[in-house]
Amino acid sequence: MRVILAEDSTLLREGLVRLLVEEGHEVLAALPDAESLLRETEERRPDIVVADIRMPPTHTDEGLRAAVAIRARCPETGVLVLSQHVERAYAARLLAVGAERVGYLLKDRVAQVEEFLDALERIHAGGAAIDPEVVRHLVVRTAHSDPLARLTPRERTVIEALAEGLTNAAIANRLHISQSSVEKNLNAVFDKLELSHTEGYSRRILAVLRYLES
Image (spheres, rainbow, N blue to C red):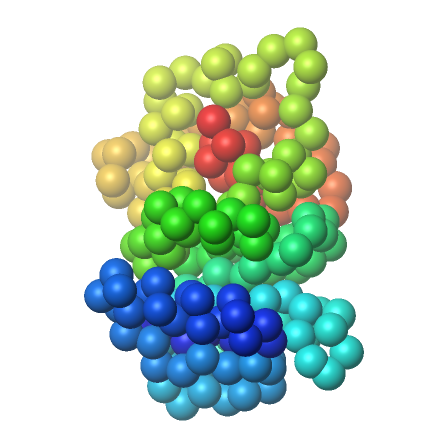
């Protein structure tokens, strides 16, 4: 795949370049700041962008803002953001437009090479790659039971399709059922995952996150 990297740490940036090249991927650019990331992405349209959340000049959320802009302007480009720590608000902003072609990993996860490469492949294929630690902070798990265990086979099939980023219409087409049936199953999933009255986050995204954690 064709990749653009944005990371202000020279050591990590060059390490990622070497890793990706050794795996047969093409690194179009390796950049130290978010401003050049946005410009290069719009010009070169890579398959995936890998960006640190905190970059110059303020080291706050420059990388995240660039990633959100890329998702809006270049929807065909996958986005994987890297963070030193779990940031609930940042993850929510990144996922606000959907859980397709998107990833949020802690930097410690990059050291686990196979997991990092697998995340890139999943994003490139149109899916999501959310760090388990991020998931635990976004979705509060019940202490008494696993809600996923209560899903029917049909509900599991629907949420699996949802996790792939399919729309209700696409899910209905794949499963050969009506859209109203898809909506009915999704509402049952939201109820069983205790997301019926969740505020502040999209229930579809939270359902996907819960599924990805399972």
